[in-house]
Every structure is written in structure tokens, then in C-alpha cells.
Image (cartoon, rainbow, N blue to C red; front, side):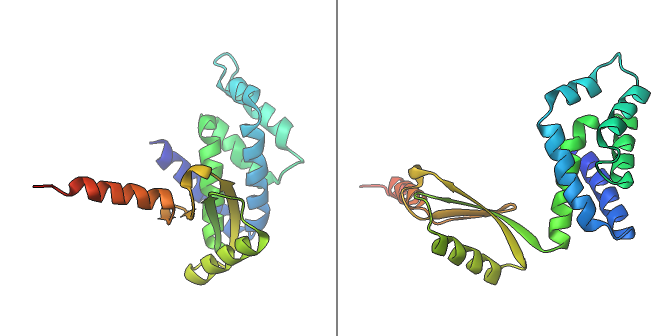
Length: 182
């Protein structure tokens, strides 16, 4: 249910951005708003407090965001509060951000390797991803996990390419366990 809510609201914000030709502006603002909510547990507690009425919650949102983000974003946030969907703000913003990234052909890749990759290796990985996907730009995220032993795991959305030595050893182990000795 929460995913449907976030998609519905995220789609609505995206349609508003397209209609008003403010995709880039609202994209930047959505990332900033998401950061504010993720970094401020007190704000979420305040919005969830049962003794604070909706008008006061809306006033709080307006005081925080008015003048710092566009009127469209402030109005959108007040609608979310008015509809008691403030617990979904993070998911809504992420849904909108993902939709804008798809629209602008910006991919997000998570690369895990056993050792830190050099700048040349990072450029090679990014170039290979650009050549083999429909994306024009990538937001690259690199992590080191020594347990993979060697190779890489690359995740883009729900697609995962695992070419690590660890996964190959595990696959061989499973295959060996299937062999029955007479």
C-alpha cells in the first residue's frame, strides 16, 4: 500500500514538473527536502504527534520550506501533510527522484569490489555501463568489500551482475554437492 501511495504522489509531482517545465528545479528541491526529513527525526515526530492539529503541522511545513524551495514544492508538501501522508515523504521523494532520473536518462550504479578501484578503472566501468545501457549519464557509487575476494558486483536498479570470485566459488560448491558418488 505504501508503495502505491508513494508512486501516486511521486507521479503527481512529476506531472506537475513536466507541466510547469520545472523538472530540474523540483528534482534538486526533492533531493534537498528528502535530506531534511532523513536528517531530522524530530520533524517526523512533530508531524506524527497526535495533539498537534493539521493546520499547525501545515504551518510548520510552510515555515520550514517557504522561501527556500519553490511554491510548487511547498504546496505539494502541505498537500502531503493535509492528507496525513507525512510518513511517506521519503518514499514519495525517492519515487519522484527515480522518475526524473529515468526521464533524464540518469542511471544509478552501485559497484562493489574487493579493492579500491583506480580512477582509470572507474572510468572504464562507467564507460562500459554507458555503452551497454540506455542511460546517458551515471551516478556512480563505489564500495569496497574484501569478502568478494575479486571481481565486481554491479547493481543498477533491480538488475545485478555478479562476477565475483566469491559467487563463482559458491556456485562450484553447489555443483559439487549435486554430484553423487557411487
